Amino acid sequence: MKLPVSRWLLAALVLLAVASGIDNLHRPLANPDEGRYSEISREMVVSGDWVTPRLNGIKYFEKPPLQYWATAAAFKAFGMNEPAARLYVWFAGLATLLIVGFVGLRLFGLEAGLASMLALVASPYFMAFGGIVTLDMGLTLWTTATFAALLLAEHAVERPREQRTWMLVSWAAMALAVLSKGLVGIVFAGAAVFFAMATSRSAAILARMRWGWGLAIFAVIAVPWFVLVSRANPEFAHFFFIHEHFERFLTHEHRRVQPAWFFVPIVLAGFLPWMAALVIAIGRAWRAEAGARFQPLRISLLWSAFILLFFSASGSKLPAYVLPLFPSLALVLGRFLATGETRKLAICLAVIAPVGIAIMIAGAGLPASAKDSWTQALYASAQPWVYAAGAIVIVSCAGLAALLARGHRWAGLVGAAFATVMMIECVENGYEELSPRQSGITVAHALAPLVTPATRLYSVAHYDQSLPFYLGRTLKLVDYVDEFETGQEAEPGCCIARLDDFAPDWLRPGDALAIMQPGAFEKLRALGLPMQVLHEDPRRVLVRKP
Image (tube, rainbow, N blue to C red; front, side):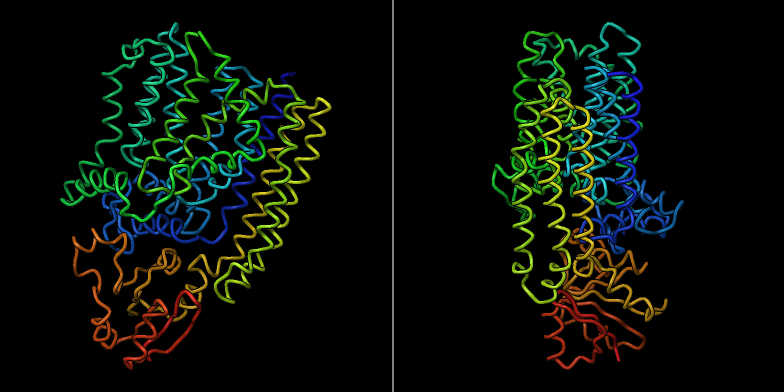
């Protein structure tokens, strides 16, 4: 490949990733994660307390603060809005994409680096999470940076100064991974070192770890917040280190029980349209490095498998957990896309075309799956976008397979990436049609004209994660615990524990508004509590004290 063409491809990839992310920044925040994490950052800005995270005014210790800090800084710079809430996640996705390309370039050459980036851009799973406010893309960035720097350090063993630099970068990135989502940042880094030893059949890497400077860098970055938050909140250490790590992993307390194979189809489908190629790429990568001193592809495969097995063994499973393995698998897949026979790549694309038909069939059944007429209407509005996404899969797989069969490798690879971005755009537009159901923005618009600084706000047997963000106010929880248990125990006066105790507080002098679960509304209405209904749907009822 000629260098000018390579530069054009790199520029196109970056522009594609940037455009995709920017277009998705303005979508209303969805429940639960987008509302939760955006609200924690908003409250940091308002309170000025950047040590103790709070959600709806209540202490919240489930995750470390790096993303909260980054988003709070974005709010201070750009205002409290959806684009600012998504800015760090968008940056994390783009940075991860560039890291994958850089590592592929350094380890396997220019074409493999570009193909690895194309593989990741063609992953609808990875690209979609670049526009969703969760902590998983931030963790993915810093675990990928840790892993990538470790590979580059091992690649540079004969260049001591470069090796030292990359190893220290790995220590720093590991610290930021810990500040992103906890001890898993250390676990994944340790696994990478172990697999480097296993593939080389030598423990020599341990002597190259730069332990003194590395531990110092890690401690300077990661330790201060844990010390400060523990001193300010005696309950933090047990909840964060014991409950959030060991109890969450080993038990079903969070009711996220899934079968052991839960993540396997997610990983395969996550690389659509290259999921068939991924299977071939894994086998080729393993065979290609047999007997080599340094085996980055094998290390990548083992590390990816470890992440998959680690979360598969957990008693709590959510789809986003396996996002950190996508960049390392993209390196493996990218090498195959850059070197594999184009006719074989064409077959890999062609066999995926029926997936588009499956997407369209699923879209056809959307309205019928709704439990009420309101949701049915929203699903019907989203349905055309699902059809469009399915059509893109069918047409792009068939058309690009024809290009690849004629030997046009890079046109096929770039086309697959563009088609994936178009498909994601359709899915996101369809999801936006569900905003009245999935976001508190509609209720917030109904409430906002009625809220004054003196208005009391209640959330009864219900908590809409995005509502406080859009109102710019916290609400007093009534008969609702869930993730607030530790905070409510630490500050008992922050809520009304029982529904029976709500009436006296509601009847106090002054203006009051409440959002409540429909069952709670019916119970309170049966008791004769005065309430003027402002908004009602199958999920919530908004009332005002007459």
